[in-house]
Each structure stands twice: as structure tokens, then as C-alpha cells.
Image 1 (cartoon, one colour):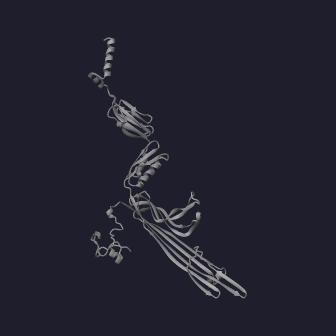
Image 2 (cartoon, one colour; image 1 turned 180 degrees about the horizontal axis):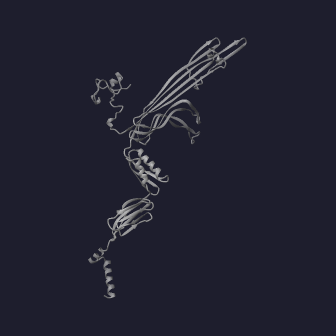
Image 3 (cartoon, helix red, strand yellow; image 1 turned 60 degrees about the vertical axis):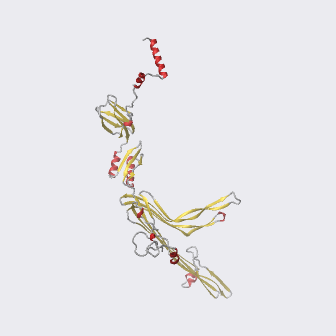
Length: 480
């Protein structure tokens, strides 16, 4: 075939290909072109963690002909025999290693993650908590992560503390430990306070005049009661003799205040729960003025201050039936003592009362069902003042006419009883409400007999109102 005929042949084939009319033989030739195949990839690789300076020996199923290491500065592979290779971690990082046989086929592939050596920390965790499944792995250059499960929150925290101490202060420890059964703690608290007040006041006021010849002596004595800062006497007896008027002021008062609160709270181990029973009272907090008016209209702003019985506690279950408990309780009430009267802008006058507060805070280790008593918080305050005319008030017997006595005694005793229990959830049918079994009385019973509730078993009671069970006598929800 000549050169001209070859060119013509190629040109004809080109025209046929351009027109899309490819012969069957040509299509078969194109189908035989080999397809590109991936000989090795990390998709089929096996993950192997290595510590820095640590090695692992691998036995392969066939003879090794070629080795590919993606980054020899991170890990290296040393072939000792035809089927045994040693992989060594050099520095922290990730790389992969592939092994091929004489025909270029992949024998095995490994995805290598070189991390810091944490075997010492693992041994310490196993020794401290042999029953827990806690693992530690390196993440990046300066981070480690704790995974696995712990029996309670205390074990998880203990593992975190051990890892934080052993890995170094420059490393970050990520706590990914899951607690298998997070215990719940119910705290039963009884706050009891008794305050006793005794006030005694006795005084005589004299008013009159004495004549000595041409001299006249006028006197007028008012002996104050200054122990409380205000006169409390309300009983008076006035006697008038020739030119002399005597007023006897006397009062005796005794009072007692009893405060009782029994809050029950439930919290998950390691969490904080709080309780407040009381109220809020207003405190003036400046003025808000509308300057668009002429003259400006001002209204007082009010802030609210809480008072009452508050409780805050944080339980941590250490072991079955034993826990660490942090308790903070406070009892406060409004008092007129040390109150403040404010004369604000705009002509507003307000009196701000004071707050008497008793607070206790402690952290203890206590068994479930054990009680803790915060007692001994006793406060006693005694005030006694005598006012009168100097010299005359010291006279025996007669000195009583020229003086007043003011006596105050305040005693306060506060006791707090704390009992924690490790509790579990129960079914609703096992719980009782305060209104269980309560049925309102009928109109004739309420009007004629003054009853608020229906008495079960009495005449006229609806059968459906009687709760299930066996009862003897008149039973039901009774209001005192």
C-alpha cells in the first residue's frame, strides 16, 4: 500500500467516525480498552493505632514485593522476611501503608494513627476502677478523650481527674464517659424555728408645782422608753393630787413565732436543685420621669426582694447507699427593726423594712437515709434601759417615781434536719394526692351541718363517691 492510499484510508475512517457510522468491528475494538482501576485505597484499609516510638509486627498471607508508605516521617515499615513486616510510629500524625505482591496486587493496607503513648494512663484507670469500662485515646497533638461507661458520676469524675493529672497540664482532656445509671437523690428537709419576745415597760411621769413662800417650783418629767426606739406602752393610769399629777405607764408583752417548713426535693446525682417558699416585698429603686410633660411627671420604680425559706443542695452519689451532699439553706423574714424611711424626689415617702436572715451552708458525706442536724443556731438578745432624773432616781423606793424601766428579751432558735435518700421512679398508681377521696358535701349537709366534705358511709352518700377498699366508721377528707 502506498502512502497516498494510506492517507485515503485514514481519511475515510475519520469521515465515518465523524458521521457516527462506526462499524461493529471498530466498536468491539474500543470496548477492549482497559479501564483504570484503583490498586489500593484507605477504603479497604485496617485501622491501627500506634504510640510514638512504639511498633507492631504484622504477618501477611503472601510474599511482599513492594511497600508504599504515604508519609515516612510519621510511620515507617521495615520488612524483615518475605511475609513479616514491622511498623514503627515516628511522630504524632496519620498516614497509610500498602503492601503488594510480585504481580502488583494489593496484599494489605493499613491506616496508621500515631498518637502519644497513653498505656500508663490506661493502667492507672484500670487499677483505680477495675469494674468500669473506660478508655482513653489521643486526639491531635495536645488533646485526649475519655470514652466508655462508668457506674456513677463519681467514677466518671474520678477518671477525668486521673487523666488530667497524668497527661500533663498543657493537654486538654475531653470527658466523653457515659454514666450507666444516674442515681437520683431526694432530700427531705425540716426547717423549724421558734422566736420568743418578752417586753416589760414601767414608768411614772410627774407634772405639778410646789410653793415655798413666794417661790414656785414647776416640774414636768416624762421618762421615755428607749430600748426599742419607740414607746410601746398603751396602759396608763393617771392620779392627781393637790398641784401634782402622776401618770403611770406600764406594759408587759410576750409573744412567740413558730416557723416550720418541710420541703422535699429530688435531683440527679451531680446536679443542683433549689426550693423557695415565701414571698417578695417592694423596695423603691429611684424614679422614672416623663420629661415631655410640663412639669415632668415622676413615678417611683420598684424592685422586689425575696424572703422566706430557701433551700439549695447538690448531691453526688459516691457508692451505692453513700453520697456527698452540699446543702445551703436560708430563713429570712421582714422586720420593722432597722427600717429606713426615704423622702424621695417628687414628694414620695416610703419606708423600707429590714430583713432578718439565718443562713447555713455545709458539705458532708452521709449514707442514704441518714440524717444531718444543723442545730445550735441560737440567738438571744437582751436590752434593758432605765431613764429618770439624776439623783432622785437612785433614792430607795421613792426613786421609782422619777424613773422608767424598759426591758426587752428576744430569743431565736433555728434547727434544720436534712435526710437524703437514693430514690427511683415509681408508677403513678403508687402515689397519693392530698385530694384523694375528697368529695364536696351536698347543699343540705353544708348549710345545716356546716360540712365541707362528704362523710363516706353516711346516709345519702353517693355509692360512686366511696373509694375502693374496706373502711370502718366515718372516714374521709377532714378539714380541721
